[in-house]
Length: 118
Image 1 (tube, rainbow, N blue to C red):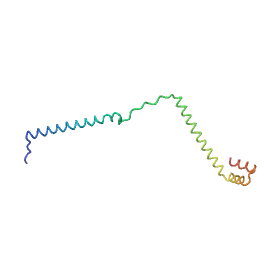
Image 2: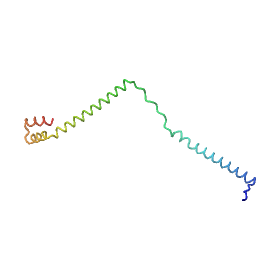
Image 3: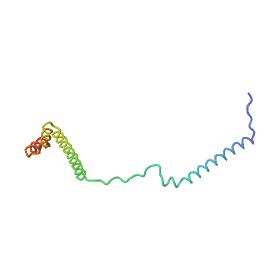
Image 4: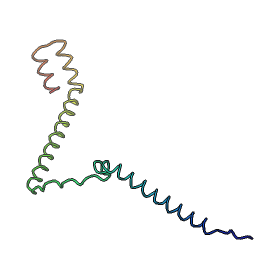
């Protein structure tokens, strides 16, 4: 098996070409970084850290908690009242007295309707 022979000049030219291409690659990379540097400064990849929220006292946090609890309780009470009102309005006695009042709008029928329909 014959061994490849390299002459001194071929080896020197290959090394010089490698160094030259390496320098070109470094220069092209530096130029691209320099060209895009203003974009990197104005649009950073990582989000900037935000300031931590100001510390609140335990009393203030407890008051906010109580307010949220009260609002939630009021909403639940409102939903319960609406469900009960709908249930009363859809009941058979309410519908009967509603029809009676529509047919004969007397004070007695109105009182019965109000009593059963709320």
